[in-house]
Structures are given as structure tokens and as C-alpha cells.
Amino acid sequence: MLYELHIKVLLLIIIANGAPIIARHIFRAHFNDPLDLGMRFFDKRPIFGPSKTMRGIFMAVMITPVAAHYMDINWFTGFLIGLYAMFGDLFSSFIKRRKGFESSDMAFGLDQVPESLFPLLALQVYFGFSLIEILGMVAIFTIVELILSRILFYMNIRLRPY
Image: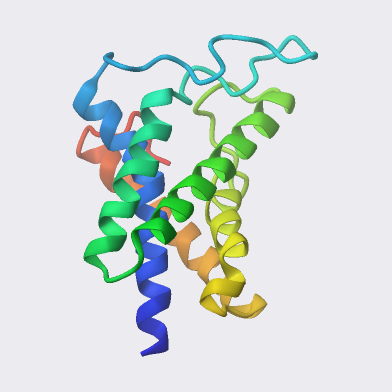
């Protein structure tokens, strides 16, 4: 069924984006070195900020292929979904730092769109998704991410409710 593939891919994107949050909850302060090593960009602002850690990226690109395997999707495709979701997350953090947002501040749209759009565009040809399907999946991801974010906050897993 065509929609089954859409659901599986959306679940993998959600898993990729949730893995760093769950990893922070499990490992606490362990392995939480910032990906940008605290370096600053030309504008004297952090490149990504302290909430983007090596642990988070590692967990996303390691957990997503495992989940893909259990969904009968090639593990390498899962790896690419995790990798491109993290590229999207880093892109949004980079832009947010340039705009003066603090680490973990909410920027509606910027916090959801790149994280779902990047992997969908990267694998568009592989999955055969149309532009309308991709836009619909980004919209669904945005809604689901906002709901899950609140749930994880109330479960004391996420630090902020968005």
C-alpha cells in the first residue's frame, strides 16, 4: 500500500529527530560534547549551540537504520534518513543562531521543516514521492512533532514543551 510507505518514512524521520532527545534523557551529562566544540562563527555567535551534541547526531544515525530494518526498509536508507534529518536540524540551528535565537528556543517552522524536508528531498527519487506528497508529509511531521514534544515534556523527557 502506498500510504504505508509514507507512514514508515514519517516514523523514521520522527525516530531520527527524537533519538537525540531520548539519548539526552538516558545518558544525562555523559557524551554531551557540543558538535561545534563551542566554536563561534564569523558573527561571534555559536555555530550550532550547546544543545547540538555529538551524542545526539550519533544516536540519530545509528538508531534510524535499526528502526528501518524492522520496518522492512533497507538499513542504508534508514541511515540516510537519519543523516539528512540531522543535517536539517543542524541547518535550522545554524540559522537560528544567526537570527539571535538562544539554544533550544522555539522557532515555529524552522524547527520542523528542515528536519523533515531534507530527508524527503534527498530520497525523493528513491521513494518516488511527488512534491505534493512531500509537502503533505512535512505538514504532518510538523503537527506530530509539536504534539509529541508536549507529551515528552510532560513525561519529563524533554526540557521545553515544544
